[in-house]
Structures are given as structure tokens and as C-alpha cells.
Image 1 (cartoon, one colour):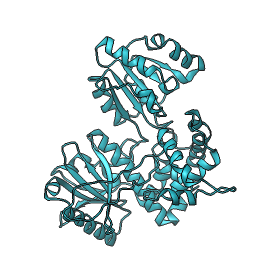
Image 2: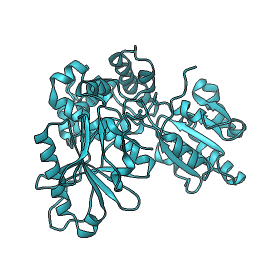
Image 3: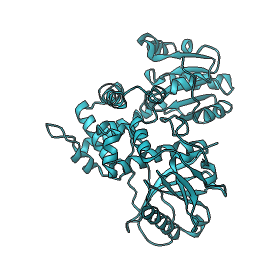
Image 4: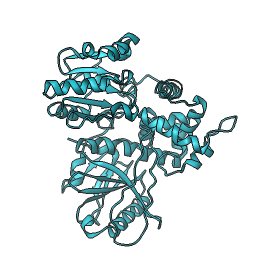
Amino acid sequence: MAEYRKRLADRAIDSALATFGAVIIEGPRAVGKTTTALQHVASAVRLDSGPELANLAEVSPSLVLAGDVPRLVDEWQLAPSIWNAVRHAVDERGRPGQFIMTGSAAPTDDVTRHSGAGRFRRVIIRPMSLMESGDSTGTVDFVDLFADGPVAGLGGPTVADYARLIVRGGWPALVAQRGRSPGDYLGSYLDDVARVDIPALGSRVDPMRMKALIRSLARNSATEAPATRLAAEAEVDDGGVSPQSVRKYLDALARVYVLEEQPAWLPHLRSAVRQRVRPKWHLIDPSLAAAALAASETVLLGEPKTLGFLFESLSIRDLRIYADVVGGTVSHYRDEQGLEVDAVVELPDGRWSAFEIKLGGQASIDAAATNLKKLVARVTESRAAALARLVVLTAGATSYVRDDGVAVVALGHLAIR
């Protein structure tokens, strides 16, 4: 058996088990949820190992839940009624750390309508960050970007390396087994999403149209494309996806954790400038976008614009993973005057740092720094006082602080200790 590669989510799971009766681990298929959960449990039952187990969980959940604790119930959404059985068991036992439940799909709201407040804690596992896959030098601590910590680093991935990392993604199987073809592996993954995973939720979708929409999302990664544009670009031989169907399909992709919207940041502004509130589109890992576009690392290096958008998605993936550790959120900013900032990470105590994401180049970094300072000038004084850092996140090989105080950080230097 391969040695377990630790995940940042391990910290959240340990903390949650000490406080809550049940921990819900969510995330896309093949991201390592079960492997991670098994590091924290004393016994396990896998509901996807046979239809009889899912049926037993529906008919007699107490039998499935019996076992040493913490007990893992893997792929619990295959027997949705077990949610309430776990809730009752947690109440009766009155102790934390009883169950871990994993799922590769979010069931409909009515399944979890009975509140899990005080009983359940949700932890999401995304594909590996560059820190977790061993591709970051780790010389810049994410936490230091919210304090007066050092920002310095040299070396790390090159632009060509980032193209390779985008195509490979953070999938444990591809990280551990370098001989696998990312294009073949992820092409099959997307085919299963459209033909198996989403229909298994009871969602009626046409696999060809779903795959066409995924390609449209891939072309519009890191943008705020409206549903009409996504529909227009989701072309198939008999007409494509209607705008009316796009939202239903997007919801289905979100339920299997393949799509994760980046919401708009809505601070109070000093002026009457109107903000735009559309989310940005990101597939859960930029490798899915590359696979949907049949883009190899060579293709990406020949298409700098596409590489730039997918590098932004790679950066957002890692920012989300690091922000999760400290309870932060990742959003973006855009207003009617055209000012756009790629990411705003806000911590629970109100501190925030703003990020512009660029492949590199001095002119591009200078323009990004100017953009960031414009944002600070537009927020209220109280918001400005809570600002921790302005950061240009790059695909370069140097991390440093400019004379104007803006930090320039290579994505491949980031980690969280």
C-alpha cells in the first residue's frame, strides 16, 4: 500500500472530531476522501461496495452504524435516510467523535432538512494544493499574508512547470503515479460525471449536452460569463443547451463538486459605484478544464491567454484550500467602472487580503499593483483599516515586497504551516 500523503483537511477533521458528534467529508470523486477518512477512524462501512449495504442502511441503519468509533460511513448519500439515523445516534450518545460520513455528491435539501447544528461539521476536500502535492517550496506562509510576516523566496516551478501542473491537477492518483496520462484519466472522469455521477442523483440530463456545457465552462474559466454565453458556446450537433437548462446543469455539476463558483465580494464602498455580483466560474481543479479542452501542456504554452485563465483557476484552488485551514473565504471584486480584483480572502476576524493573479512580467505586475491600490481607495475607512496585504500572485520564481508595500508572491512558494 502506498504511503499516505497528508492533507491539510486532516487538521480540520481532527479538530471537528474533538467537538462534533459527526464529521461530513465532502468533495469530488477520486479526491481522496475515503483514504483521508480512514486515517481518523476505528471502523468503517462502505455503502458503495454492494447494493445490499445501501439497502441495509435504509432498512436497518442501526446495524450499519454499529462499530468502534469514530466509525466511517463511506458514500452515505447512497442511503440518504441514514442522515437522520446518525443525528439520532449522536444525540443519544452525547459524545463527540462518533462518526465520519463521506460523500461525492450533495443530496437534495430535503434529505438534510433536519438541522445538524451542534452535531455535524462539514469539511471539504479538494484536489491537492501545490503544498500537498510537494510542488511548492513552502517559503512563504499563507498566514503571514495576514500579518507582518516575511515575504521572500527564490526558485520553484517555472511557467512550463505550471502548465504541466495545470494539466495534471491535484488528483492523488496522478500525483502518486506519474506514468498515468492525465488526458486519458480526466477525459474518462468527465465522461463518468456526465453519464454516471449526475444521473445517479436523479438529475435528468443529456450526457452530450452536459459535456458540451463543461467544455463551455472550461473556455470561460475564471470569468463571469452569463448563462446565455455558456449556452451559446455549448454546441452539439442538434442545437446545444438552452439557457433555461444551463442553470439546472450548473446546479448538478455543483452537487457532484465538479463546479465551484467564486462569489463576488460585497464590501461597503466610499462612493456610489455599483458592484457587479455575478460569480466567477471555476471547475474544482483546472486540470478538468484542460481535459475538457484537450489541452496538453504544450498546447497551453502556445496559448498564453488560456494558460493565464487556467493559472488563475489553479491559484484560486490553492487559495481556497489554504483559506479553509483558517476559516477564510475567497471571493472576487468587480464594479461598473471596470475595476476588477481576482481574489479577496477574508478571515473570520474581518482581516482581508486582496490578490491579483498574473503569469508574470514587470508591466503586468505594475498594473496589478495599481489595481489593488485602487480597490483600497474605494472601500470604506473601516474596511481599509482591516486590510492585511495587497498581493500579486505570479508564476514567477521570486517572492518579495515592493517599495510601495505590495507583496509579489510566486504561487509555488505558498504553503500554510
